[in-house]
Amino acid sequence: MSRPKTLPNSPGVTPGDVWRVAAQQKPHVLARRYNVRTELMRNWLTGADEMPVMLYELLAMQVVCMLPGTAGQFAGWRVLDGHRFTGPGIEHRGGITFDDVYRLPEYWRASSLAERQAELIERLMRERDFYKRQCELEARHGILLRSMFDGPTRRSS
Image 1: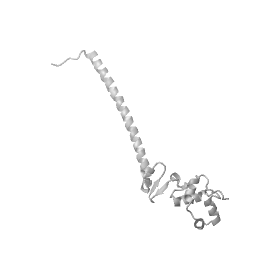
Image 2: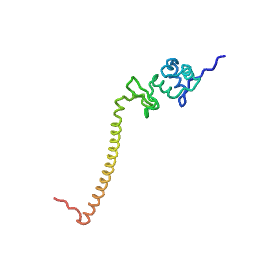
Image 3: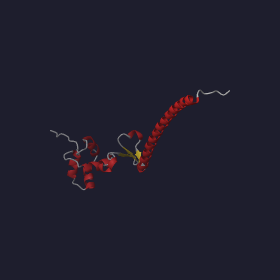
Image 4: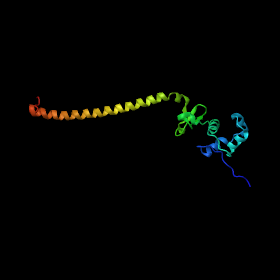
């Protein structure tokens, strides 16, 4: 009777993702690279033992160029063609280049400036509308008051 196949697993990672990075790996090569026993590495890759998360992240970085959990806000992003990052929701735009990452503070400042300018424009438009209404009200009352005190307007001939 054949023994049931098990998938490699790692805590907090879906089995499909672990299998994707572990499927083509050779246990003896990885054991030598990471200085562990070949039997232990074979157990991790076949699913007999739970694979450490750090090994999964190392393999993910090598196989699919996925940044590890220690990459902060870029954890789980992938590196494409060696010079572009791609993350959730930006695949269709071709990713972010390394130059863009260096310019992030400038982007944040520009975004903040644009937001402040939009608020200023809105405030100025409200003030303009207020003064326009005030001028219309004062003009109506001004004409009425002048006709009351000066009498009817006379036409010059």
